[in-house]
Image (cartoon, rainbow, N blue to C red):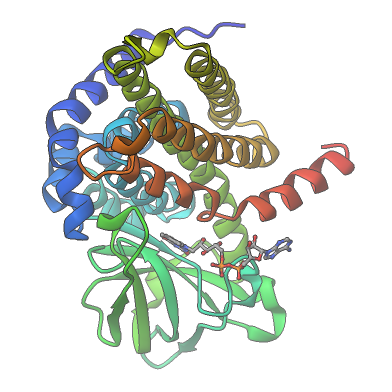
Length: 382
Ligand SMILES: Cc1cc2nc3c(=O)[nH]c(=O)nc-3n(C[C@H](O)[C@H](O)[C@H](O)COP(=O)(O)OP(=O)(O)OC[C@H]3O[C@@H](n4cnc5c(N)ncnc54)[C@H](O)[C@@H]3O)c2cc1C
């Protein structure tokens, strides 16, 4: 078993680390406090090529796959979870278009989503369809006269929904057929009948602009159907498998960032006449944090390896997301504890990381839903 990175992967990791230190870390607190999407960060990511990770070069991407995404997102999340999440969730749309799009759709949309710097969004959740994604009520009715679909419904909690130029939306083309009647569409900002509603005020990941999207007789050209009619649920579930590896990467990054800060603080903070890093209680915290994070990293890398090898990876993606997100909460909690009262203050990044880490247990499927996915696979011998 070879755990080493290729030369290109090592270079990407180094580039992402430098980018995170130079561009993301200096503005991370500001992005958190302003509750505004980090437009400049995203534009810089596009200029360097991060927004095209996993997209073939002929469509403006920079190639690579799940492991390259993990390397970049992890480095970003060490310094700014909001920016890491924005990249990770943005990539769902170009990856879905690359996997299911027609040649015309790939040529039209992928260069814009990669080097073009337009943000992508993935809109499945609705007010009454969260964990139960099959409960989607948004409809898409085909109008043969104009060769368009007419979309009606409301999506909620959509990351970057207020800023995205190109969105992958799920709607029912045949409501009687439930999940088999769900289809995916590529919707562009500015299409008539599509408006952005409420932008949520959140506990963490503040700059990610989680938005409500409203479709009122929104006319989408038939050529924007992504994949075949009735295949939307399958497309959504496969996109989420890949996205969960991205959340695993966010979880590792925020945990590694918190460990780095904890070690530095524990070496500097003196109590009872010596650095607190010399206290066994603190050392054991750090040992647990480091060990569990290393284990999370192995699971995320394994899921990425399976995806990149074209092997089934639904169970492992769910495992790496479940385990990684629980670890992110565990590690950021102990890191804040190691910082004592200072950790609770906004002068230190720990309280932000603690708030940001929590989302990893909720979005792209909750921990409970991941246990459903994992147990089903294990019980059925998959
Ligand atoms: C910040 C943020 C960003 C998001 N970004 C996006 C996005 O970009 N695109 C998008 O489509 N969605 C997005 N979401 C939505 C997210 O995926 C859902 O919030 C999530 O799937 C949970 O759905 P829900 O909030 O409706 O909770 P519910 O489904 O109502 O769940 C409530 C509780 O019940 C539990 N539960 C539900 N069903 C079961 C079950 N079968 N067994 C055991 N327990 C169960 C859940 O685990 C949870 O604890 C985002 C959410 C947030 C908070």
